[in-house]
Image (cartoon, rainbow, N blue to C red; front, top):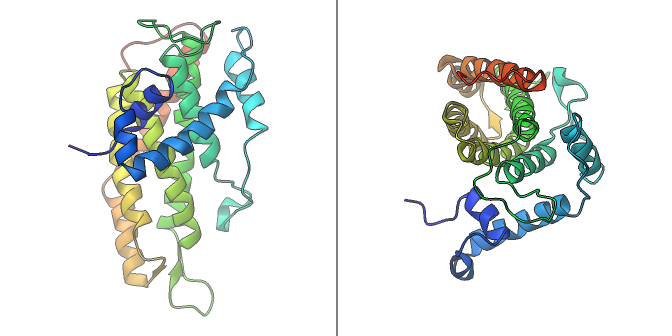
Length: 249
């Protein structure tokens, strides 16, 4: 059993629904994570809440997106790809707050509330985007080749992106678990293990090490499962948009 608080425990602590303050006093790591979480959730709570019309999720996201710092990083064939890890983590926390009933008109938590289709669509959209980004960066890694006149393959930039993806992935997994979506949570858990292994690899790889990494990424079928999960998430999102939710997924 872990000695540290999970992401959703920290979220509940922020909203006053947990009694884990004593743990923060004795755990420097959890204190640091909680301070980081406070900054993100303070940003979320600082925005006025619009009426829940059909474009509710997009309206809230547009308000928040303006305050998110963007990093100017790009690589290889992804061209202008930007790692939206901070945005991804924020969207996930926003979705978790929606599903927990945090956004009532009076700002208080609503217990036992059935998730609104608009709220669930926000989470599904965020998870789908995260899975798509993760597929892109892992595919890029699997196809990495040494630069001209160099013996080693430099994956340091991709590893920095992956470390951001790990943090976002944990938040999405916690949100999926909170929403009772076991299938998505399981895939995110499996994906996280792969991301952690890649993040801890050497930043400069020999060709043999790069081949081993490629086999690890491509050989275990995780990218296929991620793609299937993303397709299912997108389908559910569209069904919610049309008011025809399929509970079999």
